[in-house]
Length: 389
Image (cartoon, one colour):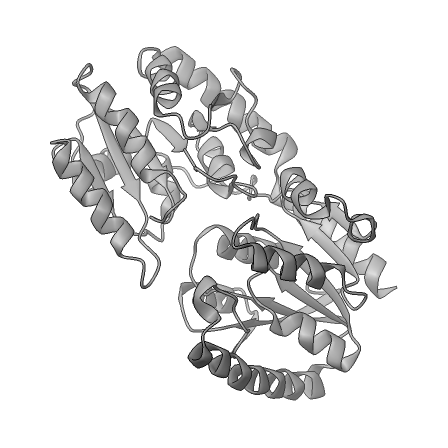
């Protein structure tokens, strides 16, 4: 059995967290023994342990924009020694053959792998252009000889990082994320209507438009609100639902969104719902999914989750969603940061129920053929074997 140390930068259940959960739930445990390190306790830890995955809480040296202060640099150094000590203890017990760092945000994996001369795989799921210092440092880190392989969640993400860097390109590969397509939960009309009434405060005949994801500076919540405000003046049968919460210490983004809703006088038309664990039920209860990110999404797990629920998806025409959505077949791509372009796309689907159903069905079929969890896991197992044999 091959032992793999996995480093992940969060314990929540948003995009990259769910990618990790899905992956480990299907990884062949007769061939691989995964031990995962998380920075804190949370819902991801609980779900992993339900799948009999060994989880350890320890510092992962998470990178963030405000870390370059004397206080935070001191904290970083302290956590480095704590993290290495914790990983050394685990290595003594499990004798790791591979360190797999999931997302760029955690540095303890590459530092530990270099220190103990263990092969390292980095799974990149971010596009970081700014600040330039972080972009520079990550490109240098990815190119290190002690980083043996780099996998990206989309071709867009890979092309961003390998540009003008042949050394990095030579050890790079794009692997699309996947979702479970064999055991899909189904919901009764009663359950769906219950969600619409109790959470969306929506009637059966209203068209529910939804953005699922963190409330932050670039997911496009305010862009979508601006587009919806134009349409709400024209259509009485539409409702906008935001499903997700702001990250810790970034609650100001949610406050700004609520203030904008008041300014537009849309309190009865827009609903904010905090993060929900049983997200499938909510996907099945909406009518149109929107991914209006103002910066390129590396991949876009919410796109394939919505498509799996047979929902048409409208997304910004940049980043990973452009590899998932087929224009005018499974959904619509609009000009990034252009609220009029987004309004036009929304209006096209608001006016045509049959088109919504057609795109939803086409999207469902595309997920099955192209974005299955089985295909994703098989691809990674081949990469593991390539590195370990």
